[in-house]
Every structure is written in C-alpha cells, then in structure tokens.
Amino acid sequence: MNNSKKNEPTASTELELSVNVEFPIHSQTSIADKLVLLKVRKLLQVLPSYSYLEIGSYLGGSLTPFLKDPQCTSILSIDQRGSQPADERGLKYNYTGVTHQTMIDNLNKHNFNASKLETFDGSVSEYNDKDNKFNLMFVDGEHTDWACFRDFIHGMKLLADDSIVVFHDSSLIYKSLKIIQEYMFASGEIFKFIKINDSEMSCLFFNRFSSLDLDTVFSSEKNLPKYYASCENTLFFTNVMTKLTAPLLAKYLVIKATPKLLTPLAQKLNQLFKPTHQKTL
Ligand SMILES: C[S@@+](CC[C@H](N)C(=O)[O-])C[C@H]1O[C@@H](n2cnc3c(N)ncnc32)[C@H](O)[C@@H]1O
Image 1 (cartoon, helix red, strand yellow):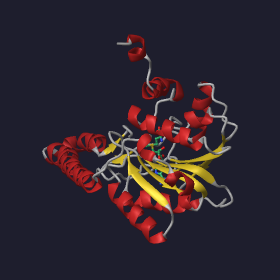
Image 2 (cartoon, protein in one colour):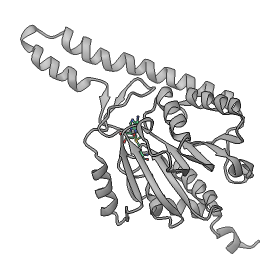
Image 3 (cartoon, protein in one colour):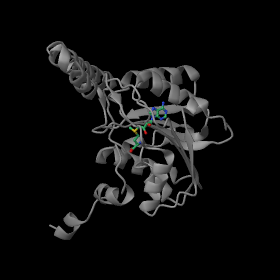
Image 4 (cartoon, protein in one colour):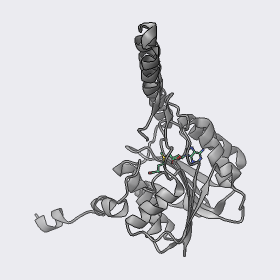
C-alpha cells in the first residue's frame, strides 16, 4: 500500500487549512460556513472578475477572503449600523457601538487594503445606486424571515445575470428560504437552490452557475421538507425557553418579589436581564 499517497492532503483538507489564513478576523460564521464561502469564491473564478455585496458585515470577518482576492474588483458592505435587530429566536441582538469606521480600522489593523470596499449604513432597501451590479451577495443581516426576504428582493436588483446568493443562519430564516424559492419558481428565472449540509449556509445559483455540477462541490441537503421540520422544532423550543426564562427572571423573580424600597435596584436588575444580549450571532 502506498502510504505517502494516504498522507497527501486532499482538496478539502487544504481548504480547511486555509480557513484561518482567509478569515483572520472574528467572524460570526462556523468553519463549515467559511468553507462554503471559499468554495463559492472558487466558483466565481470562472468569471474574468467579480464583485461582492455583503448585507451585514459587523466587524468585517466575512469580507476578508474577498478583500484579498485580486479577482474581486469591488465590494459593497451594507449594514444597518447601530441597530438592535429582532431575531426569530425571540431575542434582540445588540450591534451598537460598531461603526463602519470601526470595521475599516479593524481591517487595516489586519493589513487588509480596503480601497475597493464601499460601505453603506442602512438597509439595502434604501440603497439607490442601481447601476452597481454584483456577482455574489451574502445575506447575513437581521435574522428574521421578513428582513431576509426584504434583503433578498432588494438585493436582487443589484445582481448581475451570472450570480450567486448565499444566505447565513438558514435554520433561523428557513421560512424565508421557502418563500424565496417559491418566488423564484414563479419568476421563471433559471436558478438552483441548495442548503449545504452541516452548515448554516444556503445558496441560490443563477444562470451559468445554475448549470454547474454542484454535487461535486457541495454536500447538500436532499430532504428539504425534513430539514425545515427540524428547524421548526428547534426554533419553537428556543422561543419557548427564551420566553420562559428572560421575562420570568426580569419580571417575577426580581421586581414582583422585592420590597418597595428596593424597587430602583430591582429595576436596574430588570434592565440587565432584559432579553437584549451583547452576544451576537
Ligand atoms: C450576524 S452580524 C454579521 C456577521 C458578519 N457577516 C460576519 O460573518 O462576521 C449581523 C450584522 O447585520 C447588521 N444588520 C442588522 N440588521 C440589518 C439590516 N436590516 N440590514 C443590514 N444589516 C443589518 C448588524 O448591524 C450586524 O452588523
């Protein structure tokens, strides 16, 4: 048996090894999610050059593989900065205190040249430069079904014909993903939708990208109804837990059981226990 061959890195281990190099800034994506972005970047290399639109950038962690790719000629980061967006899990997530300048400084600190990066503070629905066209859109803003659909339909207006859309947090916005597929079927456009196994990523491929043999690149979920059912169960359980724990702690255990004199202190504690977390996704 040839042992040296056995120890040779496979294409996928090489990709895994490159993850840390490609994503040096904290990103709210898993290793599996990052690998999907790297594979998508590789698919885009069939184009002479490409452009990247990111909805939801936070500290810039998911921008880096595209900033360093010379084939990616322009990047637009759209982020409703300073917001505390709602979330399908029933919590609000606090992104205040991080501005687009915080992100750019962070990128510069990590030696990234941000000259091809443009930022827009707001929602994609408010972005007006419709001449700007992108080959890749990554939707990772507010994690609600409504916001995901809004970001998708407004972002679509900014897409080139040959393009790919990647959605993060599929298990949270799965209803939006179902609606988007239905909408695309009704539009008559040529597309392919896949949910990537063991990750939070789902992708839509348009025109020339839809004719690729995607099974050779991604391991995708073959039973989507079963996947959606499991998302529904998990999300239901998470919502029940959220609704039971945070308000109970805040309202009943603290305020209602406290003598009047201690009310200001209780109110402070109540504030602290409000379901608005610094922790982000
Ligand atoms: C989950 S973080 C993005 C993480 C980033 N893609 C990464 O991998 O590190 C979500 C970001 O979306 C932004 N955001 C929230 N609501 C938004 C909206 N409606 N449109 C655009 N961005 C939004 C937040 O300000 C936050 O920076």
